[in-house]
Length: 151
Image (cartoon, rainbow, N blue to C red; front, side, top):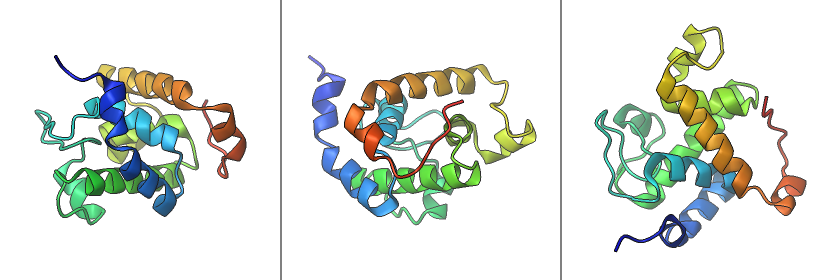
């Protein structure tokens, strides 16, 4: 019998916590992306070549100094750093950052800094938002140091 997502998630809490500390990004967001990308299965490789928990593409791994995308700690650290970069690039607009995480900044920029008209990306943004909202707790919300636009 396959482990539930909740049971697999427990195995990566320390990796997420380390990324939260280093990159000052919301754990609820990292967990939402991991669940949407890999359902906490660290050995997943997509048809497009994305690797690991946060489904990092080889180019993104190189860009954020991830030497081993199969290593869950490095994968989460690199994915969190990329999310932090995207949040800054899109002025804390979570929808655009999440869309770019899925489709790339080039696609978001090509469509005038809007969510690209790709069904996969539109569904991905909805899924991550749903998971993110579920993950947020009243305490997390109160202690956020960065205001993120959820419009």
